[in-house]
Length: 320
Image (tube, rainbow, N blue to C red; front, side, top):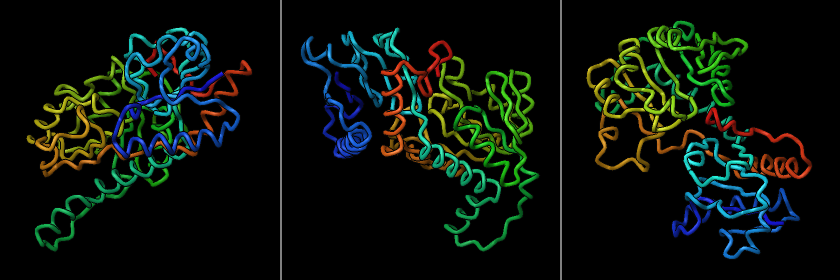
C-alpha cells in the first residue's frame, strides 16, 4: 500500500514550497523507511486503490477524492478548518491534526515575548528609539498584569501555564468547561464578557469554527477594557479587521500583535503595516518542525494499521 504526500506545495514553482516538501519527505522517509510514497494525486484507478494514508498540508479541494482504500487523513498542520470546509473530504475516513512538540514550544515562546513586550512597554520604547527619545516608562508588576488566554487546547493550555509561571495573573476561557492547574478557567458568554473587561492582554488561541469565525468584531472589541491589548496567534478569520482598526484608532484597543490575517501574505497597502499600534508577524509564531512532526505521523500510521486509537483525532462535529 502507498502513502500519499499532498499539500499546497503540489504544482507550486515556489522554491520555498518545494524545499518544505523536501524536508517533510526526508523526515517521513526516515520515520517510515519501508513505505511506498506517492508524491502526486493518483493518475489511474489502480494507483488510487493502493493509497492507504494521505499525509496532507492544506491540500487543494478535491485532492482526496477517489481513494477507496483510504484509512487515515493525517494533517501536518495544527489547523484543519480548510480541510473540513472541503465538501469532497471523505466523511468516513478518520482525520488527525498535528500536535507537534516543537511547534508547541515555539508558540509558547512567541506568546511570552508578546505579553512581556506589551506588559513592559517594549513596543513603546522601540517607537521612542526611532524618534531619538530617551525616556524611561513605568510599568506594573507581572502579578498586576491580567492575561486572558482564549482557547485551552494543546497550545492554549501550554501558553496559559507558561505565562502563569512568569508570575502573570492568568485566566483561561474556552467554549466548553475545562480545568487547568494554576489557571482560573471559565466558559460561556457571560464569563467571557467579564474576563474581557478585566484583562490587560488577551491572547487568542481558539480553534477556527463556525462559532468562532469573526469572533473579534465591533461588539466583542467593545467588551475589552479600554486600552487593553490583543495578541492573535490563531487564525486571521477570527478578526474582523476593519473593526479592529476602528478600535485601535479610537484607543479602545491599545496595541495588537498579529501573526495571522484574512489574506496572506498581508497586502502591501493594508493599514496594519503602518499603524503605530500594530505589530505584524508574517505567520511565524510557531511553525511545524518536519522532524518532530514525522514522529507523530509515523505513530498514527502504525496505529491505524494496528487498529489502535489515533493521536489527536479531529471531532468533526466540533470542528477541531
